Length: 64
Image (tube, rainbow, N blue to C red):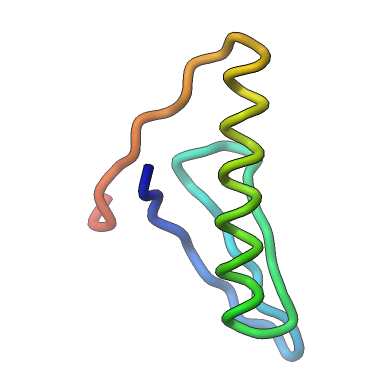
């Protein structure tokens, strides 16, 4: 699953939001760490949804 993300750059931190998966967000001290962390968090969040018997949201296009 490929999910579009929104990256927010702070003074010393990069935040990553995953609009397709409510409650899924991540971050890191630099861009690379933030993206890697987001990938791990997306996977973990989806695994929790499956374990709880909840529907996994469908991915949307970046334009949306």
